[in-house]
Image (cartoon, rainbow, N blue to C red):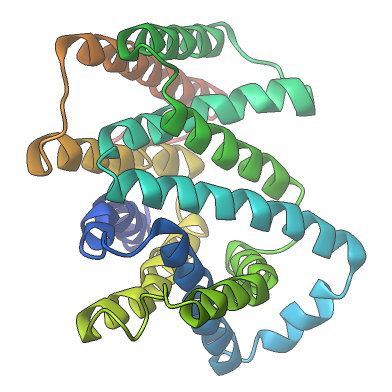
Length: 298
C-alpha cells in the first residue's frame, strides 16, 4: 500500500469534510457571490499551476475539440449548481442535510450506471440501493417535505460523475476547463453586483476579501491531493475514505453548529448508513474474491 497516497486521500477528504467551517466564516456574503469567487479564483490558481508545470499548452490544444468542450460545458453547469446548493446550505444552517446528500451520492452514481450505462448490480448492491431509497423516503415523511438539499446535491453530483465518466481529460485539466468555462459569466456577475452596490469583495473588510480569494485554494488544493492519491491507491480504499467527508460534515452540523437532529432523523440516517455499510463491505469482499492474491488488511 502506498502510504503517501493514503495520507493524501485522507487529507483531501478531511479538508472537504471541514470546509463548512471556512464557508461559515464568510456567511455574510451571499452564496451566489461566493460561488462566483470560487469559480474565478479556482481558475486563476489552476491556470497558474499549469503554467508553472508547463502543462497549459496540452490543455489548450485538447480543449479546442468541440466534443471535449461540449462535455465540459455540461459538467461545468452541473458542478456550478452543486457548489451553489452546498455553499447555500452551509451558510444557511443545513449542514446535516447536506451531509446526507454526500452519504447517498455513491449509491446514486451506481444506480445511474445501471440506467444509462447498462451496468449490472449484484444482489447486495440492489439491497443497498433499496435501503438508501427507503431512508430518503422515511426522511421525506419525517421532514414533512423531501430533503431537497440532499437530493439536489446527490442528483447534481451524480450526473456530474456520469458526465465525467465519458470525459477525456484528467481531474485537474477537467476542473481547469470547467472553471474556465464559468470564468467569464462569474466575472461579469460579480462586476454587475459591484456596479449596483451589492458586491461584497473590497467592501466587507480585508479578512473577508482574503477568504473569498482563498476559495480558489480551498477548491484546488484538495483536488490536487485527491488526484495524486487516485494514481497511487486502489478504488476500494478511495471509496471507503470518501465517507470521511460527509461524516465530518454531519458531526460539524450537530456538535459544533447545533443543528437539530431528532430521533426521527436519526432513524432515517441510520437506514442510509446501513445501506452504506452493506455497500462498502460487499464491494470489498467482491474485489477480494476476484483478486485472491490481494494481501489481507493489517
